[in-house]
Image (cartoon, rainbow, N blue to C red; front, side):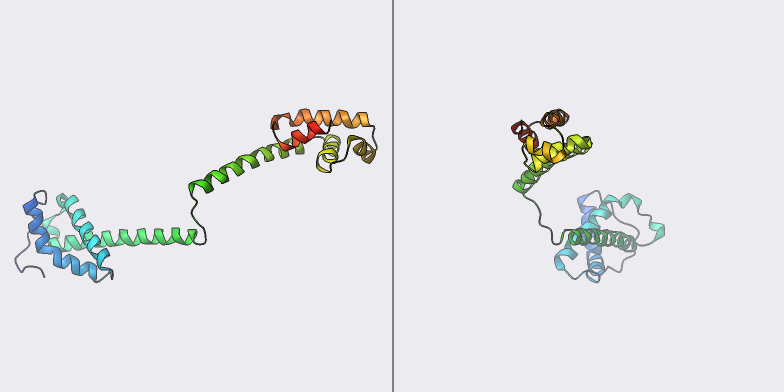
Length: 191
């Protein structure tokens, strides 16, 4: 309960004695304000401490002619509680977005990075493959993907084996930027 004496403004909150006196005079009022709005005793204690810390930080902004120190403290308390509520809302939103997802440990991240790097090489080969002309792509697909021999690919396309070998050579040269890939290894084996 507040003391009945007339409040003229906060004491000098920059000194331990001044802050102690101010705190003692207003702790019950501020704690009552907080506990009417918060059910968790630990949270109420934390928020009350935050309110007094904020009051220390803005003691120079108090204007006695605008009202009693307890009203000034309640204004600070409302701001602290509002900030806490906004933080809880952000936290709840983040938790809702994360629900059903597990957090990744270092091994998971490393495995994903390896997979992304491997897929990057695949995407590069796929882009180069898509850029090939239709005759080169057809020859390449029959030999590498469908695993036909160059003679079988020539028969399937109705061209000579020499034509298939030239097309494979040109396709290998076009795909050369993806060195070390499975496709290039298979291309070399198809010679």
